[in-house]
Amino acid sequence: MTDNHGINDHNHSCPHEGTFPTMSQFQLGMGTSGTVGLYVTSIMVCLVNATMFAILIRKFLREVPERQVPDLCWVTSLFTAISFFTVLMIYMPRSTEFLLGAYRVYEAMVIGRFVELNLLWHGGEKELMRGLGENPRMRFNLPPCCCCLLCLKNSLVTRDRVKMVRLVVGQMVYIQLFVLFLQLVFQFNDIHDGPLSLSNPHTYVKFAGRISFLFGFWGLFVFFKIEHTFKLLNGFRYVEKFTVMKLILVLFLVQETIIEGLASRGIISCIPHLSGLARGSIINCCMVMVEAFILGVVNFYLYNRHPKVLEKNKRSLKNEMEMEN
Image 1 (cartoon, rainbow, N blue to C red):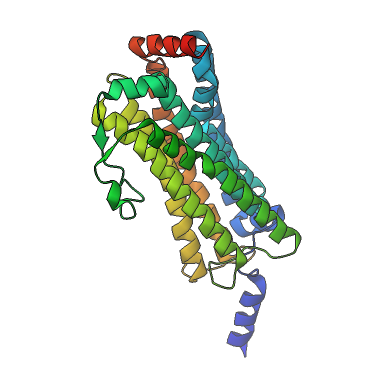
Image 2 (cartoon, rainbow, N blue to C red; image 1 turned 120 degrees about the vertical axis):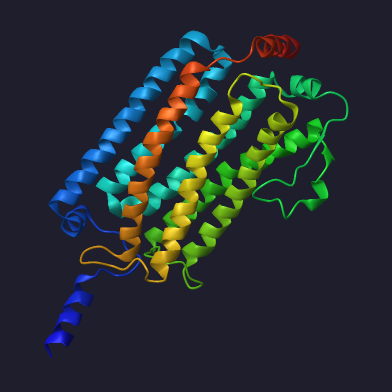
C-alpha cells in the first residue's frame, strides 16, 4: 500500500508530458541554488556577448564600407541573439515553443544575410563570376543534401545557379515564418507541443521547418565551397568565420533534435514540477550557454581583427555600384 501510494504521489507531482512549466514551477523544480545559478549565468553570458557585439558595431561603422555594415551587424549578432533567447527560455520557460520558432526565423535571416555578405565581399555577382574565370566547375552535391544532388557532382558555376542558390537560402525565412504561424494557431486552439509522434501535429510542422533549414544550409555550403575551391578571399579568415557560424547553428539543431527524441522515449524523465521535455530544454540551454560564450569570443576575435574586405574587392564593389548607377 505504501509503495503504491508513493508511486501515485510521484505520478501526480509530474506534469503532463510535453508541457513547459511556469516560472514558479521552474523554481520549485530546479530548487533555489539551481534557479539562481541558471539566472545569473544566462544573464552574464548574454551581457558578455552583447558587449562584444557593441564593440564590433563601433568598429564596423569606422572601418567597413557602409554597404556591408547592416549585413555584418546581422551576422555578428548571432551569439548575442542566441544568448538572449536562452535567457528568455530560462526566465519564461512556458514561452519556449514560441521562442524556438522565433529563433528559427531569426536564424534563417542570419544565414541569408551571410550569403548576401559573401557576395559583397566578392564585389557582387558580376565580379564573382569574373573572378571564377572561364567555365568554372565544382561539385554542388554538398552537405546536408549530398546524397540528393549526385547529378550536380561536377557542374558549371553559372550566374543563374548562383541566383538559384540565393533563392534556396531565401526560402528559409518564409517557410520558418509559416511554421511559426501554424504553431501559434495550434497554441491558440490548445494543441500544445509534446514528444515527437505521428499523432502530434507539431511533429509535421517541425519536419517541414527542418527540411527548409537543411536546404538553406546547403545553399550556405555552396558559397563556402566556391571560396574553398577558387580561394578568392585569401587572407580574410573566411573559412574560420564560416566555421564558427556553422558550428553554433549545427550544434543548436542537433542538440535540440536529440534531446526531443530522448524526451519522447522517456530517457529524459520527468521530475516534480518539470516534464521530461522541460528538463531537456534546460539541458539544451545549459549547453548552448557554454557554446555561445566560447564561440562568441572566437567570433569577436575574427571580426575584430579582420573586419575589412580586401582592397581588390573594395575596388570591385565600387565598380559594380558605378555600373548599376
